[in-house]
Image 1 (cartoon, rainbow, N blue to C red):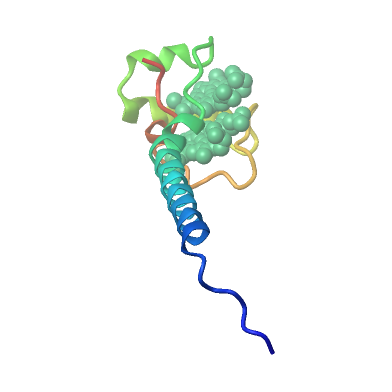
Image 2 (tube, rainbow, N blue to C red):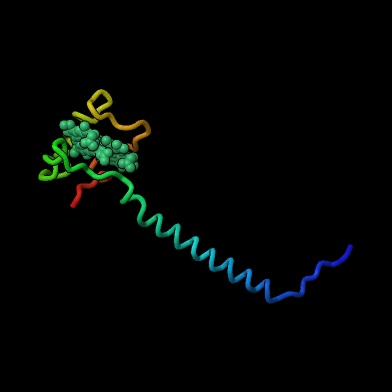
Length: 96
Ligand code: HEC
Ligand code: HEC
């Protein structure tokens, strides 16, 4: 069996540099995703006739009323697989 040519330092180094750049870029992307995605992807408390009344209340007080419409048999039931649901407004924040 013939030995493979191994003595080509320059292209090998270039490849390593490329992989390092890709690695750092990948890490940065994941970090940005983790820092930014959760707060921005959860829907905020709508600013409509049903929800505007809650903007002037404290969170705990407002949350007593959410279930009236968002219960399983209400007019806007929570989607299947909704995360644990007490303290609605910790996740569904008010618009500023
Ligand atoms: C009077 C009935 C009613 C009450 C009370 C109510 N909701 Fe809703 N909610 C709705 C209806 C109907 C929809 C679907 C249509 C819409 O987006 O307004 C909805 C939609 C939502 C949505 C999804 C918005 C979107 O962008 O799709 C969120 C989040 C929400 N409500 C949170 C809350 C929270 C938190 C409370 C308690 C503070 C609450 N709701 C109280 C009727 C209500
Ligand atoms: C642990 C965080 C968390 C809590 C607490 C929470 N939710 Fe959600 N809710 C979510 C996530 C995540 C979704 C998926 C859709 C999204 O991004 O809004 C969702 C979806 C919804 C939707 C459907 C939005 C649509 O797609 O139309 C409604 C309505 C809703 N939640 C209402 C409530 C109500 C009312 C409460 C309190 C009883 C509550 N949520 C508590 C995280 C939460």
